[in-house]
Image 1 (cartoon, helix red, strand yellow):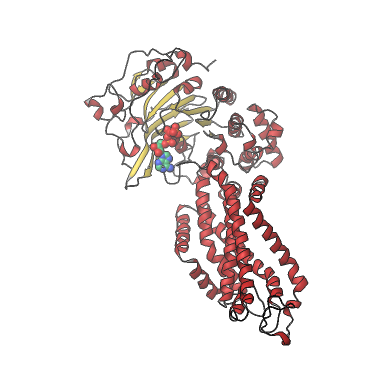
Image 2 (tube, protein in one colour; image 1 turned 60 degrees about the vertical axis):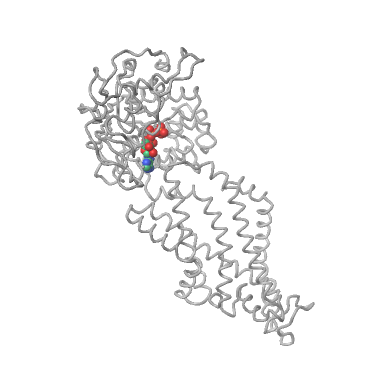
Length: 636
Ligand SMILES: Nc1ncnc2c1ncn2[C@@H]1O[C@H](COP(=O)(O)OP(=O)(O)OP(=O)(O)O)[C@@H](O)[C@H]1O
């Protein structure tokens, strides 16, 4: 939590009152045993079991000891034990919570299942079970309460880790080859700290109450030691004679418990605002259909990427599998810039993630052939793939805000790549980070390297993302919608930068975009995807001779200076099919003006012109009336 958030939590009247109370209790916990420890132990045979008097405002117990002093002195023991139990709960919960992220898939599921089972078990019964196992007394009670709370804390950690794991900066760190333990310590835990702090605070309040309960039942603190729960139990025996003897420790438990809980709630309110802003969405059966349609062409040996019949499937909610990427073939030669275009949901990002070995854990990725930067990743352990691909493939994600770890300085994040892969020292790695920031024309790179991602503008963050890719010497840069979140001017700058970087390093670039005009600005070749398949591929210069009706419709929907402003923009009627509900044959047929019975059979990619292939039974041959100015707008 940042200082501003603490301040905001304390500005809230409830938060301020709770914090004030906790400070008071902390002071009492320190000074009360010193000032009144001995006096609270003094027995007075002349004043046994007295009610309220001027000398003993809350009366005395059966041995004539002053109840008020005992309640004050018990603050230290009561709070100390509750905080100790909370610490045990948090440590055990965090360990159990991050284990699934560190262990393999099966062991991880076992841990998750065990935690879920323990969460379903009533907490009080679990505490009593542990109390019996660890024995009656303060130590047993601390362990019992701490361990009984651990499963729900672990569940919270697991949920938050799962949410953060899906974010781009974790994918970027994984791509950079960051090991599992480092990933957890540097990238996952710091980003789930806020809900953990909130819940630990609330947990402290609950632990205090649980402790009072166990001591009250005689399972907690044993005489001669005493805490509020024990005093409450003793006072309750004489509640009709001296109600204050039971009320005072009871009020102390409630007030302290409330103070912890309300402070936790106030922090949650402040933190919640950010949590909502940061949230991002996720999603998908069908069996293997024809394969040949998307296969990569016979490739010359000199390639940086070859994917043949690449499929990415997810278990479908109604059983079976859905394949959002269904037999894609893709070949990229060294130094080439290839654009992948298609409407949202056509499987562009999943194709890129599968190629970079970053597909979600739940995905089933298969291919007849897959080679990335000379590495055949299939059948190798993940750590080996990371090691091999870490420096050869760079990924520039769509949203530069989520692609950076918000709790790490930009320079440190960039430096991590070379520290992990080349074992460089901190200084040398940071110096390279500054150098790469300069390369991507981030102004004042020395100062900027020490800033956090939120201190960068959107365009600058995207440049820094490109710089991260350049920390090593990548052979392939995959840029997934790198300019979508940017305004047109900055968009152009980033595209130009990618082009410059490509010219300098000779890396091949795969640019993913839903905007065919953006692709035309940067790329030499365009691959058009529709409903998880490649429907056409052609050189940018031949876009005017696009053969597939879908490619032509995409081109027609690009506005240009000659577009009549009085008329609505051209759109493609209908919607792309759901991957789970893809029609037999040509998936575009329901939206195509040229569809006929032939289209009930799935067309394979076939050559329609030199270097141009289209998956269509009725390829168009008439040249398009394109204002290629727009398409070549940025190419100069
Ligand atoms: N983790 C997942 N589980 C199930 N289905 C998924 C998952 N990720 C993506 N999909 C599905 O895969 C399909 C293709 O998604 P993908 O993100 O590759 O599309 P895209 O073409 O990149 O679209 P956009 O331009 O909107 O990012 C979508 O229908 C999506 O619902």
